[in-house]
Length: 151
Image (tube, rainbow, N blue to C red):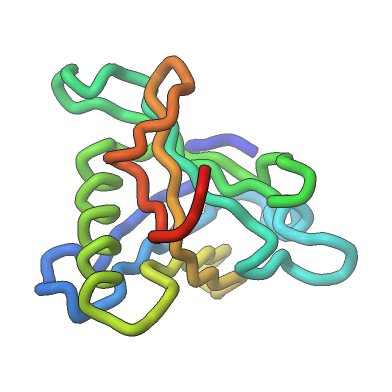
């Protein structure tokens, strides 16, 4: 699937930590293709079956660095889809999710909503978002890793 079929919007990053931040990913390509990528058998992958990561394409020191958000099947490692996203948006989102986690009793720190043709296809409540630099090294300080999780 083409990355330009996706649009990412972020809500809940300007609050004081009381609101769970939400990423909405709108898909404007062939819906059946996205459903196939997000499915295992006859059902859409659930929260526990996906992993979320962000891989920088530029150095953090660059002006306006960009990267790729990837949603992957946790068992197979296969990407369900990828989309381009500005680093500033992703890092603001991660900071808001970290703050939400510090002020709430919820294990899940953020929500991803996947929409196709204006209809909600999937909703994922997640606590981990791994960030990698352009060389593929994990950036622990930029990542959202719950306490007690060993990577």
